[in-house]
Figure (cartoon, rainbow, N blue to C red):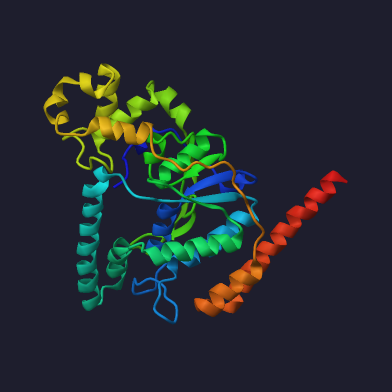
Length: 341
């Protein structure tokens, strides 16, 4: 579902170039789902190799990371572990949405409504274990570190910003702020031109950055109060939230009363919500203990062999893209050498 606090946050437009030489902790599942959703054929189906294995996620990781590394960005991918038990209702809700979208996709295809079918197909994306392993293998060949979180990937990504090991956390979800991400960058893995559904036009998707402290100061609240606002609106751990309470009303109530326990009009419903446990998930999450982030060299031949020989990628496209990356890295290296002469 994702937390709907967009209108409360101070969002500033930025660009990928501004992250050069900076480490960005990426919510891996969030990014891969984007690739699986966006990178599809004309019929709405994901890309596959000669064995029928899905490759949309690998296509996204290939080109996006070439772009990142060419700009001098240092990405780190954080993969989800076991979700908290309170997330089970949200997980079931998502499964139901995928089932309904699959039925609508098949109906649209049977009627020849391909644009409509593609829209529904994007909602059917499922991230399987073999796709996660594909992703980790490709990242390893790029020399890009990845972290296996014990629970929510967003929590460990946020923790990396808190400890100063990463400049920002990258995710589409605002939940990262509740986990304490000092800086959240959105549209990081999906920036660029995007075609609007059912319209013959494109828009430019630009990255935006949210500074947690700036937002908290502007709202006049603490991070713990932001978590309470999230609980009022509805999080992945209490998807329904509280009836007729949106972001602005939630902010008003929390500022007026201080915390959930002191808001009179929600007390009856509050007894039915595991709000203390949800607070604990956000304020004291289970995170990976990361002592050092190690970046390696790009294995150009390894990437080429893996994608072209094992996964049916076009040799010409892969080699052309990797040559662009090689030239960009060589240029940066040459510039540094000149600087120190």
